[in-house]
Amino acid sequence: MAETFDPTARFRGMTEDEIRAELDVIDARLQVLHQNADGSLRSDMSQADKREMAELLGEREEAEKRQGRNRRTLDALNRHPGSVQVAFGGDLVPSHDAVPAVDVARMQPRDVRSAALRLLETRGKHLSTEQTDRVAKTMESELGPENRYLDGDYVARRMVITESDEYRSAFQQILTESQPLLTEAETQAVRMFRALESRFMGEWTPSAGGVGVPVTIDASILLQSGAAAAPLLAAARVVPVTSNIWRGVSSAPPAFTFQTEGADTTDNAPTLTQPSITVHMARSVIPYSIEISQDYPGFAFEMEQILTQGWTDLLAQKTIVSSGTGEPWGLLTRLDATTTSEVLLTTAGTLDGAQIFKAWNALPERFRSRASWLMSVSVESQIRSFGAAPVPSSYFTVDMTADGLTRLNGRPTLVTDYMPAFVGGTSHQNYLIAGDLQNYVIAMRQGLQVEPVQHVVSTTTGLPTGKRAFFAWGRWGADTSVTQGLRLLNQT
Image (tube, rainbow, N blue to C red; front, side, top):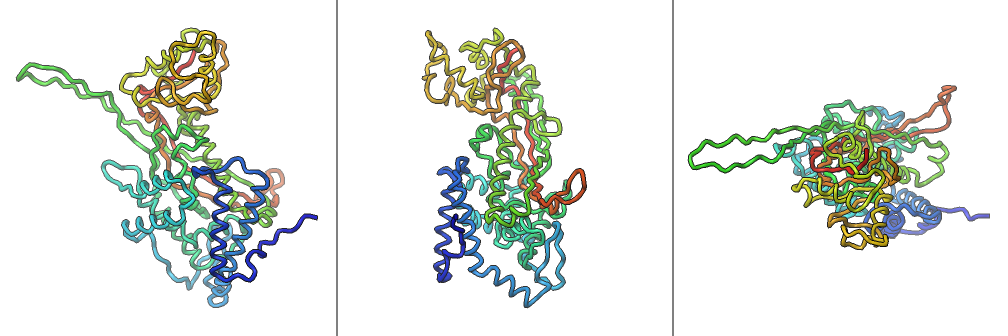
């Protein structure tokens, strides 16, 4: 018979200081288990690793209980029955004698940013240096003539609220319990978050019952650094926004002319255009059984990982092939619809060195110095095979047979499975993109939201199924800002 895991055994007889030290050990081990050295999430966890993580999370929960969280809740309930509210279906029952909490919305911006940066330092130890710097830079953004779309004050206030102990506790309870008992402080934290959303999100009405994902696990804020599963983010222009639309300015370079002394100057004003990107909502529903939420000690933590990975997968796919109708424009889809950006193969079905350089030569000079290549691993393999031919292609001087094609014609190469594979033939096919990928703009709306669905009902009988669900949603948009700076190699 398998031995039953007992999360209480580790802490028997320990003092508060000893438990606190043991918590540091647990947190360090949890970080090793679920993160790689660069801060990215592990995707190769074995069953033993997952079992160890579940046990560690169970022990961590027990340690927090022993440190007094449950005792404080019960004491508050005994002293002031009205100070503990019930969150059911996302609606908080108001307290008549609740003590007002600090109103984050009324704090001065400099004070909020200072508090947020301190929290980022303490709560964000699991983040990579690049992620930490990005969040800090985002919070320091101020609205003005040069920044019309990102209010760093909102992100800072969101950090202060959602990273507090009270909010994190309420967040996990609301998502895993049908009738969570929230302390007065936890209820105030949720109310402050909803007040923040009402104040800063004027272009939409917040849904009742929603809770925001804490900033240090919020994929819409953190996954902007080119995660391995969404490589285009590393080269595209990612613009954090707190509005529902992004507008830029684009034009061809102005012309200059030589003129004689004292002659009238020629009007060389360029034609300005204003590309705009609409932010769309992406949604996900994650059903789960009531039994899992009760029996799995690390359930809420696991859901956080699933949401993060799901958001990454969405970005990886939709930044390449999204239709642009009711959703962002994928880079490949947009260029395939732009005739002036297409470069056709000389002979359909034949991809050789001459075709690669045909795409490169079609790229205007001013975009070449910052250009990258984007292709599938299948097309990459086809290009690498040039080096294995009886007469290697004279177009390339790098080792084409090396493991992975990191550079092509001196410029970086990005590979994603969402770019089309090489199949040959004479039908319409897209193969690779060359150009300055900063001309593809991703407007990332800050803040991922999660709402609990307390009862999932059958679509046939209308009766409860014994399941609950998370309804998660986030918002982003994407499109090209300067299509002249990008070329798509395809055929027919």
